[in-house]
Image 1 (cartoon, rainbow, N blue to C red):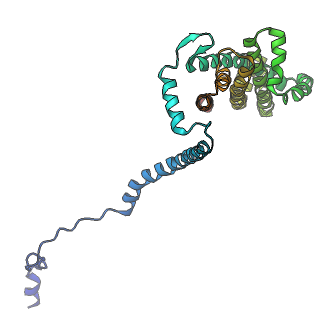
Image 2 (image 1 turned 120 degrees about the vertical axis):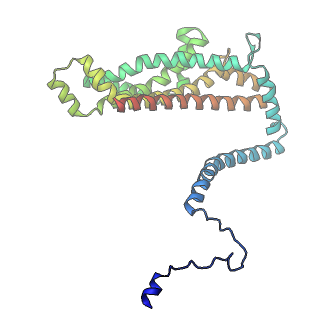
Image 3 (image 1 turned 90 degrees about the horizontal axis):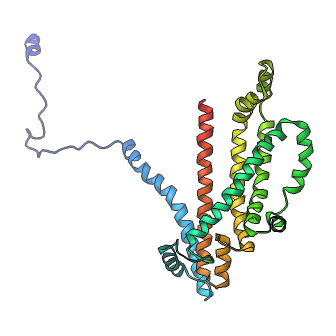
Amino acid sequence: MNALLKSVPNEPAPSPTAAGGPARTVMPRKPASVVARRAQPFATAVRLVAPPLTGIALVLVIWQVIAAQNEAFPSPLVTWQAALELFADPFYRNSPNDQGIGWNVLASLQRVAVGFGLAALVGIPLGFVIGRVQFVNRMFGPIISLLKPVSPLAWLPIGLLVFKSADPAAIWSIFICSIWPMIINTAVGVQRVPQDYMNVARVLNLSEWKILTKILLPSALPYILTGVRLAIGTAWLVIVAAEMLTGGVGIGFWVWDEWNNLNVAHIIIAIAIIGVVGLLLELALVSLARALTHEQVAN
């Protein structure tokens, strides 16, 4: 009997359909990890976008409150309409003193490029010498400590006296305010080169040029780029104030001219333009610093 029972195959359990019950389709549930992964990009986007939008909304609310209490102060809507009219033709030119906002920004950037470039040509090599030669460091150290805190605009009358013209005087102010961060940061970068590198160079009897190009420059490059970033920010700040005093074509002169015309909306627009241009310059130098330092690490 037991052998007979073992020979009989086991029959499957009756299904709900066979038992007469309705057929049901059971959908598999998605794992919680999949749902979390799909929701994560949205949550990340909210965390990135919400704080800036909240800050902008707060500024607009405060701006609107100030405009409601002061009739001479334009509201955000009025300023936006003025910006649309202003940027409809930013490069018009009616006369030397009546030009579009685009020409004024380009004129300021040109002065900054010249003054900043001259400061880099002088400041970075001088920083290498100060950081490399102890005698030169002691010679220029007190002079730099004395002149660095001086306001850049205090140098403007000296430039007007020497160059007899407003444009080179403004470039001189940019030069003198941009050179100190480059000198100081370059010298610090050279002084912080590990002594082991210099000992190896001395053992290998490397020339001063190879020490400069193979050891000092790669090691001090992050410090140099930091000085360049600080200098460009200061230069862009100084040019606006210098152009207010010297006149001519430039974003600073344009702001002062609009104040004389009591066009406050254009002044607010100019402030926004100055901030955007300064931010773009900063981002460009940050990108350059990341590219150069990454290449340095890769090499």
